[in-house]
Image 1 (tube, rainbow, N blue to C red):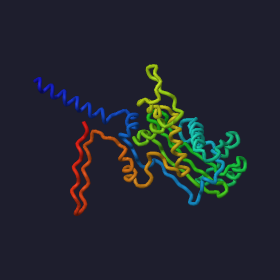
Image 2: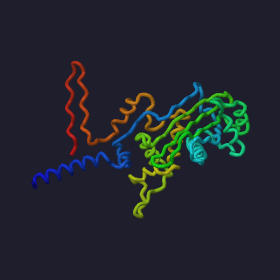
Image 3: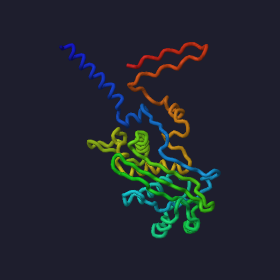
Image 4: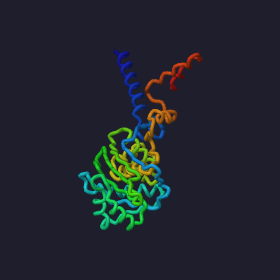
Length: 281
């Protein structure tokens, strides 16, 4: 009976130890790169051939339209997008006066087409090279948050949409949640995490604030939307071949509890592959 109890206890301790390694806090996993989630984008994008964002000197962001049940979602997301566009430092970003352009923003996009006369009037008043029109399609600020955004950048001179983004960032998706945590940890202005009267900027539980704070999640979504609108790469989002992108970071991932992968088959006529090294104890 004693031997059976000891064996059961040992098995439980071993299982708990292995499970604890696989269930490290997200902060530890992100710091140690033991798990890097790379997935395809959850948004679509369009870019006009031949368009050069380097020639843009001023961008005006119109008041957003709001198709969600939250009355302030349009104002909050528009402010977050302006902030993220400004952080890119590629052009001047201005906000259209709500009293003057709110009505125009509601009229500028009708039946899937832009009113050229309205766009030219906005460009004349603001002296903008590009006009960004946005719509909040979905929004749920509660854990797990969800935010859907449609952005369209219009060149008044060409009377064409030069770039657009349409997507839904749902944090129930593991890849989206991991990217939000990574964005929060990289933010230089992140306030310190206070616990037990000790201030520490590197806390494994602090990263979950990105999924609990509506403002931080809006900034994360707008960061990825702004990068996509300008045709820039989005961190941890595969562009093209997902398998190739995942293989590019495979060398940075650490060991887990899963058994080691089998060695590749030998080339025809070549020497047999070497046996895998035993796991470190």
